[in-house]
Length: 156
Ligand SMILES: Cc1cc2nc3c(=O)[nH]c(=O)nc-3n(C[C@H](O)[C@H](O)[C@H](O)COP(=O)(O)O)c2cc1C
Image 1 (cartoon, rainbow, N blue to C red):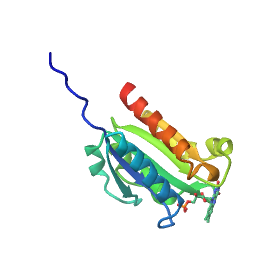
Image 2: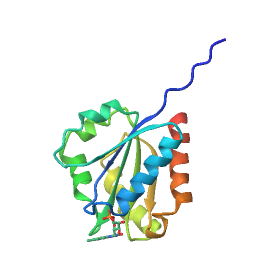
Image 3: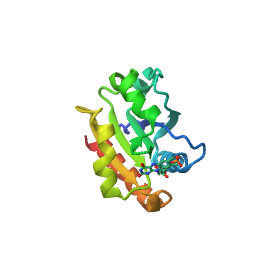
């Protein structure tokens, strides 16, 4: 009897932040490292609102995340969903979302996550998470997000 191991997940993290090396980038590096430890192949790319996103077709999972600035998801990620070919390139992909912000999780779930999700109607969202300030460097919270993403990836 032969046994075929599942191919490793290929994940791209698309992000925006105005702060180079800031809390969003640090979070992304932690997410990427934890995913890689589970055997995934992970890349990251900074969004541009007018970018060409054809390259995301190479990936199984597209993880998108950004901070909130002045009540809005950072403009290059939100702009990419509104103006570029990103939305069409996401067709058939499994998508995970996260946001970093200064607001409590409950409020951010109501105010900020819909800004992304309204642009992703009909997509398969396998994980979503607000990282409130006290959670940004909490390795257990980050590990839970990555574990949930992995489980959903294999079951959806
Ligand atoms: C100029 C500015 C505006 C912000 N506006 C909001 C906001 O409207 N709502 C919120 O919850 N957090 C807000 N924050 C908090 C950021 O979303 C949070 O600190 C985030 O982790 C910053 O990510 P960064 O380090 O990658 O820039 C703001 C931060 C800055 C610097």
